[in-house]
Length: 391
Figure 1 (cartoon, rainbow, N blue to C red):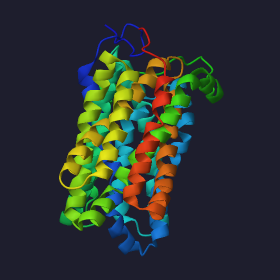
Figure 2 (figure 1 turned 30 degrees about the vertical axis):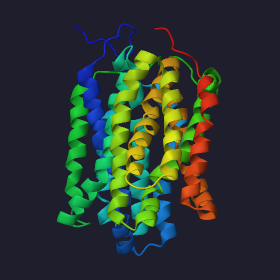
Figure 3 (figure 1 turned 90 degrees about the horizontal axis):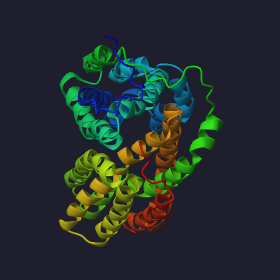
């Protein structure tokens, strides 16, 4: 009996086992890609880098994200299951070797290779999740994104823990988990293609024209949401430290935000399957800016309760938007996801600079008010999104 390709229309079943495998491997993959930030002080000391050189490291690692639409086109034309399969290993090896980099140039090369691998994994893997989820795309995206959010919370702890035991130049054996993840993916996905139609000619311009009705509102939403996301993820520890003088409390605040986000990510996709994508996005992007306004207004321990609400609502939007893209991108799903991920990258990278500039001008507390108001600007664009697509 031959196995049915995953892109056959009859695949309406929610394939829990394979979705969990891919979600766990998403977690393992993203743990490695989160190593740079916590290890940066040690790398600066070892290679005698300036802060400008140190800042450029992150940019080089994220630079391949600009190629996401082109990777998406490739993913739509050929079966790219091996991109997904080998990406955890391809990310794990260079990120496990950064402590051994003898000079700045080699470190840049390792991070650039990591950036390519990150794109090769993240562009086609949501397409695979979509195909495995049947009619419950939101639920599948929640499983998938929960892995990514957990990795952002756990990854820095893993990096610091391994380096504290084995040293910066001795923690490289940790790559074994990434290699094992690729082996696990190979045995579960080696016979599953995700190509749509090998003979169909697909262009980026054609994909954009067909999906701009959804990609343009989503880009506007990402930009509006980006102010809230940047002000919390980049500057929350700094704000809490300035307000309280307690560095540990600053770290606890960011961890609380991230853990709450894991809950939001896990719940939002399934809720959007039941109640509709627009409705859940509307609730989330009303709840997040209102909670951020309260956070900036009040003080004391109640502020940490508002962080739970901000994390749950703000971070819950990603699986819903991913499901929305895949729901309407039947002809070129990977290219559509590439456009979405490129917009998300630009929103994160550009807006964090803007938020930092605003913070220098008016202070971080006032910046949170501005970010919350900018977040409310997403509401009209949510209303422009299409309603639930009939299956």
